Amino acid sequence: MTTRFMAIAMALFASACSSVDDRVSAAIGDAVRDKQMQEIRIAALTDFEWEKVYLFDPYAPRAHICEVLGVEARQCERVVPFESMDDGIMSLAFVSGTEVVRYARHRRLNGDFTPVASRQPILATEAVFKVVPSGVLQDGRPWLRLVLNGA
Image (cartoon, rainbow, N blue to C red; front, side, top):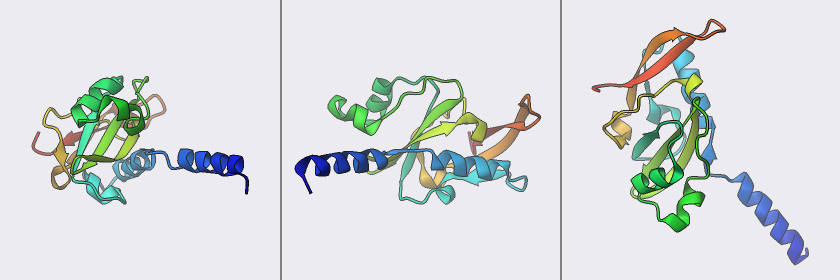
């Protein structure tokens, strides 16, 4: 194989392994739409290890998120690969120790965490949210808020 081919293959592989994860949002959405669920445990919906989670509102600037997470400016764009530019998108940062292990884009249609809890980060053992119906969407589906237990 040529050096150029290897470089292209490595670039494609790296882009495929993005640290942005939409699967977390989908799992949360499936859980909140389960009519039997009155509360959800975020740790039960993830398939990776983490100790604490941070929730960030839509439009939260990347620089602010990196400051909260303690990420150096030169690493910020790599660790926080997107900024929410939409009312319907927020971010979840899963942290273990001081390392961001997963940065997830979360669609508020999959459960609305806003307004985000003021008590952050939230430990994995305490990331339990009540599912609270809060209105109806234009298509008749319920708008479901996620309220931190004990908040």
